[in-house]
Image (cartoon, rainbow, N blue to C red; front, side):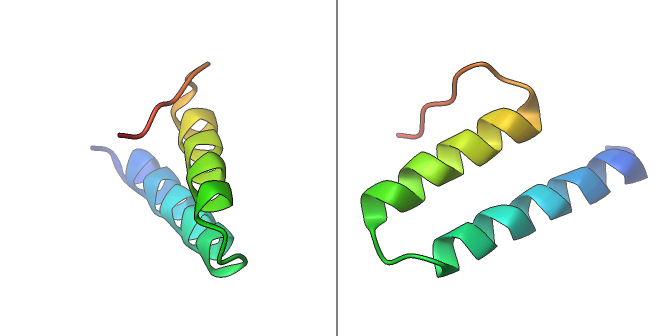
Length: 49
């Protein structure tokens, strides 16, 4: 993994962590996490099992 990809991954994880801390609603946490991961990875769909 290049330094640029590593930095992007770290930023994505930080963004997800901030989203989780903003709410206690588990459904909203999963939805936001899937959205952020999909966006960060350039995916049109993202499913978390």
